[in-house]
Length: 329
Image (cartoon, rainbow, N blue to C red; front, side):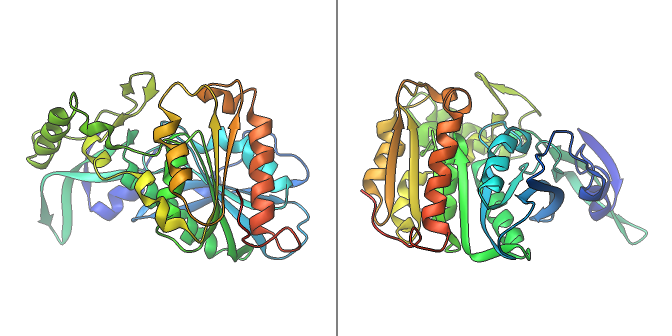
């Protein structure tokens, strides 16, 4: 979309996405009585992200172990509600959010042409960057969500975990390698390497897209564009340096759980989660859920995956005899 607006700051407020601000958003889904819910706004690089915050209604402590959840390719926080509710029922403060440009979140704005100063204001025509897939932007959003929740009264800053699925199953590795506040992660059916964009059939296209975009000859992909069966076209050159499988060695102080589908059809587990697990040092575990394909993790195996994630977080984020960082084979 294209807008002519007075003042880029004003523009960000006026056209920052279709959703309402936190104080205006009410849950449009059923929240169990033993779970509290509130909407929140998280600022990521100056852009508002819409967040959903879950917690036990009657917490056992004023500060809670905390899980930041991130969705996969083309998803939104709404799809994570069943898992977020289960984690909250298990005693966690849980934050799920929409990446910038997705769901109820605002969009990053890019000026078209050169802004002009008129009457002390900056006048610019801008484009929204909306519903595209950029792993560098998305992992930055997760890091900012961690910073946000660390500033919440209910968050125990020493017990923060991250959970990611599919595309964000790689994001949590990228994030844990860069943020020492992450004490445990769960990566389910995770994609761990974006360098497929450099495969022989794609390399020339990837570099040509990068050249065209930097010369101003093309903009960002159209909103909600299809990429094969997936929703959201990639900013393809941003995948060149995105390789969580290479980051895993920097996660030695984080407890790492990888959950994979036995019959994964979207990529080869041996080049993704299995390889990451092999390279990982410190506390780690690999679980294979038998008999399912990639999307089975959200259907017939969802309950099993939730139980495995909660057990892992309980062991590494909660105090008591099950806590602590002991080696897991």
